[in-house]
Length: 288
Image 1 (cartoon, helix red, strand yellow):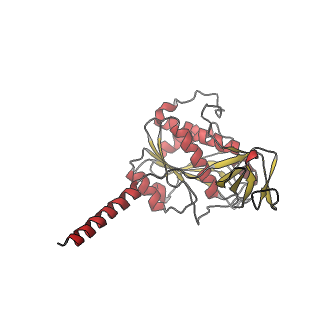
Image 2 (cartoon, helix red, strand yellow):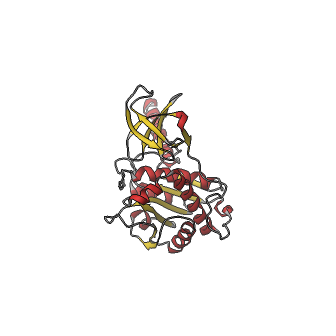
Image 3 (tube, one colour):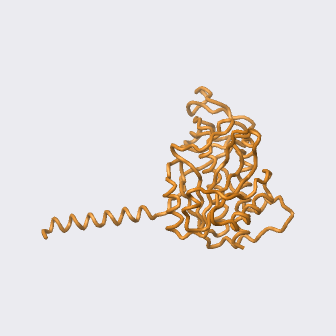
């Protein structure tokens, strides 16, 4: 075999190995969410007050950061609209790590039960798939990701090893989501969603399972004992990410975007921070 051909084959082998390593490497978080820290804030078409007003946001509204300069940030609202806002009136969304979200009078489960557990968090939809759209225009895919990022920080603060199926607004197939759980020998797979119904009065929080009813019941109980949402109970769900999963798995529907009142509740920064804490409480109870 000629020297040139040997070098070519070596380069090809190294390229395949590199590709394999890239596929297996966990995705690092890329997205950042901010919240409005003013009674009202103008969203403008450019990074100065000379530019026109696109829309107005209010105290506690959640914004997805696209890019930031010294004085202004380019953001996307939960309804997909984009624009520039002044950095002076923004603050980072941070999880509740000190138990302040606890509303129940029952004793809290020790969160050290999460230490060392591999948990896959799956923010549903993404990319071209918006999921459902709320009565006031909220994109489910964006809210799913915000909840997932807060939950990741909360679980990691208690020693869990957390992997997200997506960390930005990208398309990830259902097969890829399940494969990530199976490849990493997950102790638990949690898919996050927000619900919709043709009847706008329907509301509440529902936990679905396929082959993990005990996980669903325990985790659901830990969430709803603190949540302000109606208890929609645990239910069997023939969903791909549950059915094809080799590991314990649940799918959470964290409220109805089709219900205007509930949409206002679940899109608030206060609820988002608290629901991440409530889910963490449910997961701690499951592993306890």
